[in-house]
Length: 183
Image (cartoon, rainbow, N blue to C red; front, side, top):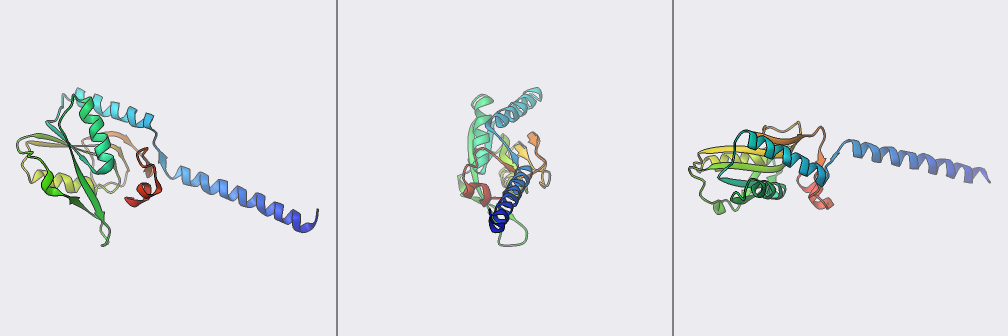
């Protein structure tokens, strides 16, 4: 074996070790959430709601993750009426703002107890925007719920399934487009 071959082999081993180390850092910096964790967190929320004797008149899911979680919650609370509000984040300014898409589609919430649900909270802008929008429509009560919450969020939900320490990859975020687009 020549010195060049030995040098190439050593460099290959070093590069492989660096790649494994970088991958382990990536995994440490994100909480990987499985469907089993989703189920356990949802059961925690449902149990807490039952103990509080809380059953909303309507559940509003916020965004795509909120649509999934709100559907699970509505079904497991006894087929509570469900609606979804789609939002998009505006990152054109320094402060991230959420905008409601198709706001005229919201049904009448006046005098109703409304639970507003997100799948996961990062900044909290989606949830705050929808809470303010629904409040302007005159509900009797608004509660908030998130299955997962990041510590840096600007809003604390009334019901929370699990607090995470790091950004997370929820199991409904299956493609890179979905994983990175909203974070």
